Image 1 (cartoon, rainbow, N blue to C red):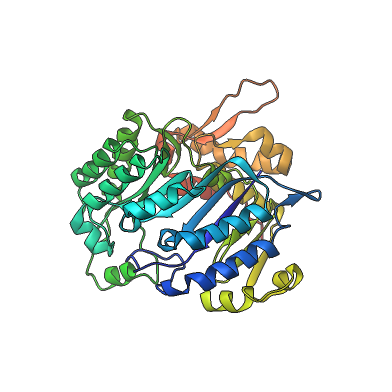
Image 2: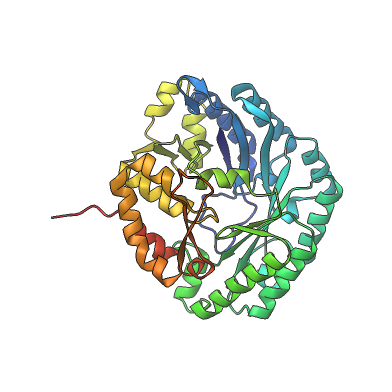
Length: 398
C-alpha cells in the first residue's frame, strides 16, 4: 500500500503561528494545477515495488488551504490522479478546509467529488483568540460549517484545535473541548502552540507582546485533553490525535508506520521506504520548472528536488520517533528483524530506565514469536520528547 500527499500552498491570509510553506497568491491556482498534474505524471513510477505499482490507499489534499481552489480545478487533479495511479476503490481521500471557505455551494460541490473525509482547521472557538491568531472565521462559523458538512453527507470529519494560547486558561480550553465533543465529529487533532522561528508569533514573543504558556499550564491542558476525549469515547491513538472507533486517519497513520508515500507540490516530502525526497518550497520555481518538465529523468535531476539516502541508523531513528508516538508503539520483533540484534539490544538497554520509572512499558502480544510492543505509558506521554531522544542511535565519535 502507499499514500499520496498533494500540497496546495495558497492561503487568503497567513496565521501568526504558521511556518508551513504557503503564499497569498491565490490567483495562480490554474497554473499551479497544470504543474501539479504534470508532476503526478512525471512521478508515476515512484510508488512501486519489484516493478509493480503499489495500490494507493490514501490521498491527502493539504496546504496551505486547498479548499480555496475552485472545484473545476479539483476535478482536473482527480482526473490526472486516477489516470496515473492505481487508487483503490475504498481509498481515504481527505480535504483540508477552513470554515470560512465552506459555503453551502462549495460544500455541495465537494460532496460530488471523491472526498470522503474532511479535516477542518478550527484551532479555537474563542472569537478573541481567533482574531489574535489572524483566523478569518468566528467560533460560530466553525460550528455552522461542521453542521453544514454533516448535513451534506460527510460522516468522517476531523477538526484541529490548538492549546496553550497566550492568556488561555484551563477553563477556556475545557470550553473548546466541550464544544468540539458536542459536534459529533469523528476525529480531533490537538496541538500545543509552538513558537516557530520566522513566524509573526515568534517576533511577538521576542518583542514581549505575548508570553508563552508555562510548562505546568501546558501539561494541565494536555491532561485535560486526554481525560475529556477518552471519557467521550475517543481512542487516543497517537500523541496529538484522537478518533472514534474505525475513524483513525489512515493517511497520517501511514507516516507513523513507515509506509511509502509520494508528495507533490512545493515543499512536499516523499518516502519510498528507504530514502527521502523533498521539493524546494518555491512556487515560482515550481511553476517554471515543473510545469514545463518533459521527462521523469529531467525531473529527478532538477536542482529544485533534494534527496537523502538514509543509513540504517537513520531509518532506526525514524522508527523510534514515529512508532513511539502511537498507542501501538514499537514492535520489538519487527525491530530486531529489520535492524538486527545490535539495534534491538541498544533500544531495550536505553529504554530500561524509563521502564523502571513507569514511563515506558512492554505490552505483551498473543504470539509465541513476538517480543511484544514497547510503548509510552500515560505518564510517558508528558515526557515523550526526552524518552525518544534517549532511544535514538548516536554514532560514536573518536
